[in-house]
Length: 566
Image 1 (cartoon, rainbow, N blue to C red):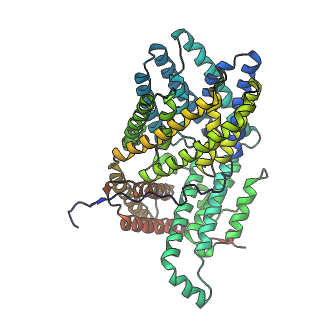
Image 2 (cartoon, one colour; image 1 turned 120 degrees about the horizontal axis):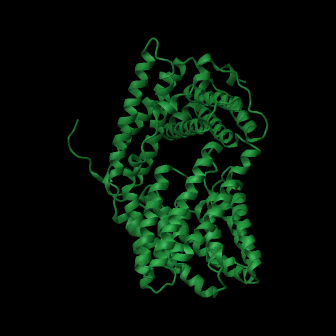
Image 3 (cartoon, rainbow, N blue to C red; image 1 turned 180 degrees about the horizontal axis):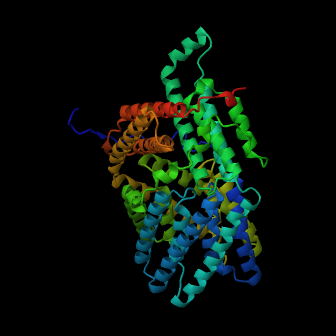
């Protein structure tokens, strides 16, 4: 083995093609859209009836928590939403107290940047999911620039807490009607992903098609690898969802058996009927009973039951460590964006700060793409605000209703592409500033455009300046983890009588390690100024790891596939 250090990877070309491409909507786009309308609408309409719409900014701090945790099972969602609300209250408390103690814009921007960095690190470490830290940064930054006295802070926090409690109830309410909805959706995604991989793995049936397949083999092989990685990730996510449900009820056992069928399809795609998998996935989308599937073997019932407990979870401090470069990028970019906005005389520098905070993704390439999407969406959104402002200025009721419409539109569109959601987020943010009184549209629009451009340019410059050299180390660690998990699983496969549940736990750990390796490699591939990604080693580790997984599935007696055949 050579001892020479790998050469740094030069700056890659920044993509433009496809950055604004409109994709398919999320399968549950309507859930956060409707939830946020109810969570925001009730407090705002109540304040409107009381003639205190000027307090709406504080209730929105709690109401917007309803955007989170829609993919989590309800037992886990209850905990996650509670932590989201508490985190929002903590951020707002820091912001309001700071605003009450100083009016120095320089200090306020610095505090806002530090809050944004902490929010970015915590949201990524806990993997709370969309909308991530952006909502926290938006609310806390706006609160920093809202004049306060210390005596007002408790009352304003109480309003945010009350709205947060309401958002918690809104987020949990669908569980009364469909208590296993999130787990059913996760299982359906796993079945569909496994079916897609099985379809791509079917061997050509004719010599002509075989020749054509061989000619395009590099592309086809890469496509199969991506499909297998996507299937493994979907199956892993389904198990995570099932582990978070608590007691193993009969619906959960039925869902476990369906996830097992998805695992079997990944292990033996040639013997799988993709149509049957897709039929089960469609049945799970409704409100009917979970499709009944006979276990492939007695071991089927034990799959995954103890694996998650055996693996445990990494401490939060361990998960925060690798995120330090992203946190530094966020702090530096947000601070510089705010200060440049102040230097240009813009009255709302927190808009530039939030724009910078919204850019930072897993690597430079994704950050660039998000910047383009943010700028395009905000500029179009400003034009939409110009068209809607006369209607919103008809009265406070019209203002509230327009904000609710944009809340719904943002969540309905953002899963298709971030820039589409930004078209609705921008006028909504501009209208929120008018809850305390109508303002001149021209001034608001100018400030928003300047802050958007400043935040995007300065934020991206900070991302380039703060290199993430830990990305290469994370790949090495992920490769080591996969190899250790693979060797442990292989030893258990070879053992004549492995301990009960040992092989299952090892298999689940290996699957999780492979999913993490793929995510780490994808993130590092778009990073600048770091050593070259060991692509061949990653591909080899994935291939051998997935082969070991398939062998483990067969070793556990899960190769009886009659239930998946037509």
